[in-house]
Image 1 (cartoon, rainbow, N blue to C red):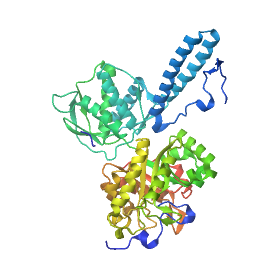
Image 2 (image 1 turned 90 degrees about the horizontal axis):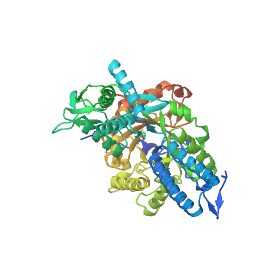
Image 3 (image 1 turned 60 degrees about the horizontal axis):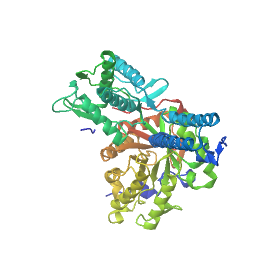
Image 4 (image 1 turned 90 degrees about the vertical axis):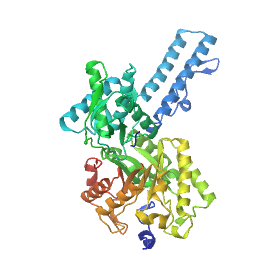
Amino acid sequence: MIDNLGNTSYYESQNFHKGSNSMNIHNSPSNTSLKQNNINIFPQKNDLPKIQTNHHFQDNLRYIHSILIATFIYLFCFIRVHGVTMKRLLYLSVLLTFLLVLVSNASATQLSYNEISNASKIIADQASKTGQIPSQITVNSKNITLDDYLYAATTTTINIANNKKTNVNIKGYKPPTNPTGTATGPLYKTYSTGVGYLQAAKNIKTYMEANGRSPNYVTTKIGKINYSSLIYAYAKIINFYNTTGELPNYIKIENITGGAVLAHGAIWLPASSMEKVNFTELKNKGIKDIFLGEQAFTKEQYRTTLLNFLKNASNAGIRVSAWVICLQQNDEWVDPTDSVYIENLVNRIKGYLNFTSVGGIHLDYIRYPGTAYKVPNATDIITGVVQRIYGVVKSVNPNLLLSAALMPEKSMNAYYYGQDYSKLAQYLDVLVPMAYKGNYKETSDWIRNVTSYIKSKSGNKEVWTGIQTYRSDDNITALSKEELESDIMAALKGGATGYVLFRYGLIDSAFWDGKPYHLQT
C-alpha cells in the first residue's frame, strides 16, 4: 500500500483583505491546396488542430494519432477512386510528412531507454558518493525531474521484466507531499507473500498515474521505503541490468535522505501586470504557477494581451490559473446560498476553462466576511460551493488544478469565515493560507506555526503558503530579499510544499537574482 470563540477576528475588525482596493486586491497562412473534383486534401489554417501543452499532452497526442489514422483511411479511399499519378503522390507525401512531424513534436516529452539508463547512472553515481540524489538530471538537453524519473524508472523495471525496452512518456509528475519511511536492507525481486521491488514498481506506477505525483513511501516486505531511497534503488536496478543483462535477485535499500526537492513557487498576478512579466525570471526562481486576475478574462481590453500571455506562459512551462473572486460582487458580499449567483459563478468558471492553456482555477473570497458564526451550517455551505466548483472543474479535465486562498486564523477560521480546512481539503488540490504577517503584526515564526497547523488539517493535500511581499496593507514598501526569503523558509519549515507571493509588482528586485528554494526535511 502506498501513502504514502472568543476574540474578534483581525480581518473582521479591520475590514480588509489582501490590501486596499487601489492595489487590485484578492481575498486581497494559407496553404497550397490540391483540388481534384472539388476535394481539398490539404488542411486549411482554420482546420489545423490546436496543439496544447503541459497537462493536455496525452489528449493532444491521442488527437493527432486519430487525425493520422483518419487521413490514411481517407487517402486509401481517394486513391481507390481517383487513381495515382506522380503529382498526386508528391502532394500526398508532403501531407503525410506534415502529419508525422506533428506526431513527432507531440512526442517530444518521451524518454528513450538509453536516456533513462543514463539518468540512472547519474543518480546512482552521485548517491553512492554523497548519500544524496540530485534535485534533477539533464540528459540530451532534457531536464528530468526526480518525479518523472521515478515514473520512468519503475515503468522501465516493469518493461524489462516483460522483456521490453521502450520509450516512456513523462508528464510533469509532482513531488510527494510528506515523504516518510525508514526501511533498509535487502529487498528481493519477488516474494511468495509480501511486496518485492517488482510489485512495488507496479504499485508506484499505478499510484502516480492516478494521483499525478510521487508517493510519500511504498510499503514492502521490509517496511516503508522513503521517496529518495526508492529513486536510488530503481537507479541501481537499471544499472545492474545494463551491466549483467538480468534484473537483480535483490537490491539493497539504503536510507537516502538527500535528494533536495524544489519547493513549488507561485505568484498572484493582476491582469494589469501581464505585459510586465519576465517569464525567464520567474522560471529561474522556481515559479511554476501564476494565479491571474480574472479581469484578464472578462475585459475585452486585455484579450490580445491575454492570448499572448497564455502562449508565453505555456512555452515557459508555467501553469496559469484563473484567479476568481467568488463571493464578492462590486465590493459587496454575496450570500453563498443565492443559487442564481452560484450558478452564474460556475458558468464564469466554465468560460475561463475554455481558454487554451488555462491550467486551473484559483478561488478567492470563498468565505463569509467574518460573520459565519451567525449562519447555521456555515462551513457546510462554503464547502458545498467549493464541492460544486470542484465537480465542474474536474469534469472538464481531472488534471486541472483547483486551489483556494484561505484565511490563516487556524481554529477560528470556521467560526468566523466558514472555512473548515479539513472539509475543504476534500475538494481542493492545494490549500493556500494567506499568512500575511504584516497585516497580523506577526513574525516569521507565526508563518511557520500557521502553515504547520493547516498542513495537519489538510490530509494528503498540498499546502502552498501565501506570503506577503510588502510591509502591510498600510505600508506597501517591499520587504527586503532577505526578509522575504526568511518568510518563505518559515513556511517550508512548517511543512508547506510551496509558497505563493502576493504580489507581482511589489517585490524587491534583488529577490529575482537568487536561486529556487528546496523543501525542508
